[in-house]
Image (cartoon, rainbow, N blue to C red; front, top):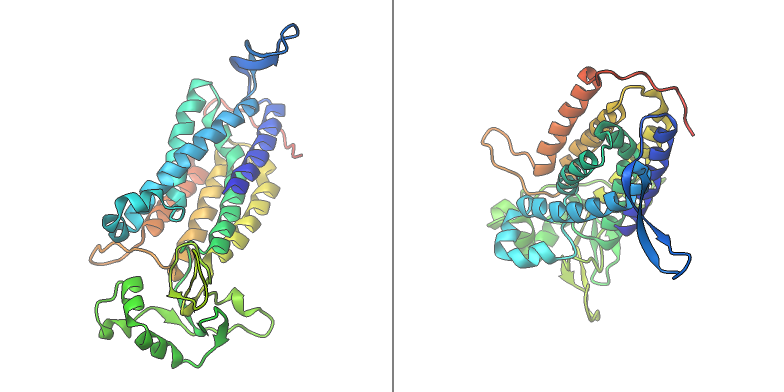
Length: 341
């Protein structure tokens, strides 16, 4: 998460400098710290401050608002678990919902930008590629820690108690379910053995040109302590999933880092403010909506459909992004020159 914030800070600051060179940003009065030539101590003095020099403050707002929003939205996304242990859910290391963080941080940064007369549409454009990169790096953290952001079961691989994965026949999945019904009922919220036979899974062995772990991970020693205890392991994080799952966090990391390079390459082609951010919203929304199809998530019961929280938000972001691309036009705006560095 720290690396994600640092990467976003670097990329957004670089883009803010570019927009400053294009004449899209101006400095406003503020305070800076300088060293007193007599005492050698740092003192504050009034000066004209450029928007990119305020990125430290913006980063802090994003971090605080992002973490709070991510936790609150995660509570709604995993409502049953939250009701069982509200304090533990809010203060655990795992369980962060990106869209909750994005929405909360955006609101805080909007009022900050308004206070210091930073054009919010220009700031959004500068942030788009950095947000995509940060999301991809953050998902790597989800993957390597095994924090529960994974997909449905890939029944092609089962675990032995040492934590190693083995290719298994298609019939093996139901045998493992019957061997550990208590865990599967608790994990999947299924109430009886008849329902256990309907646990979502897919049998997808990896082709010869792909490593097995790209399609099936059992997340041994995962940070959620989810799964079965591994014999001989002591201390924290001694569990392993009995059946592999699709590593959706890894898929998102690869996809979003790739989309960052796409946004970075085309950023100079947009002359109207907010258009690049509109494209970011569409790409992020489509990516997340599609990955939800194989992710494990709490689903809302709307009778005729059962969407997850992320599917709802991503669909809204796609609509907003398309509306921005098709209809948004800032008044009294002249086209900026095509300059990319």
